[in-house]
Image 1 (cartoon, one colour):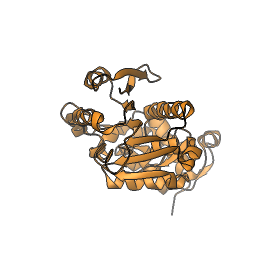
Image 2 (image 1 turned 90 degrees about the horizontal axis):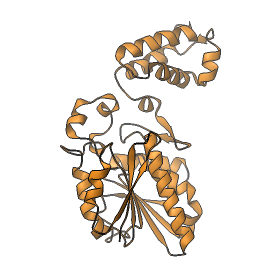
Image 3 (image 1 turned 90 degrees about the vertical axis):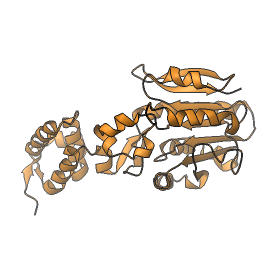
Image 4 (image 1 turned 180 degrees about the horizontal axis):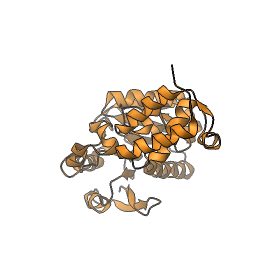
Length: 293
């Protein structure tokens, strides 16, 4: 049976434990996990430090997982991202704040193209992972998808990731509006699927050596979604080489990249492509936009 204890005392002990384990955000982690196991919000917990914690065993279990390095999003089973709540587990990467920038860029480009003319539009999210971008785009353009003005494909090499994406799409009521494809990059484009006019891609861009170090969440997230080879650019090179053969003429490609990779990727752009960079809130180059000829 759980041992009753005051919330304030339990929280102080938890913060100390997580700091000792090396968590860079010990207080936030402790508060979020306590809110998760109690079903209370953080504000209530902080305002009621003398309230009794009846869920001590569950809290200890969650703290043990976090002290071992497991990401909070995996422990809770969800991530709040882009005003959405997405299911998260070890089948796919945890959606990052910087990926919201990629989603916003895609939404802006699709909206501009739909407003420009009545031509049918094909959009493709490559390496869809948890389906975060596909969910955000589908919710924004539900009517266009229903009317057939927009077709949206979410693809991934991992069947496990696609399964998670399918669950997230279903939970947000847009599963019937998105086609899922188990595919290596853009292989089906121009074959069994239409050539995309708008492409988003959050491909593996971490070096193998960095993945091997297993720092932070890298020790828990799927390697296939992280490992970009010795220099982090192996998958990106293959993707860039495929673009002239798989994308529609005049397509817009939006890529999330690691810090300091934008100039390298810009140099790999197909001949005649226009390349620009979208910085994140910290001023770092995170999204590269390529407009193909």
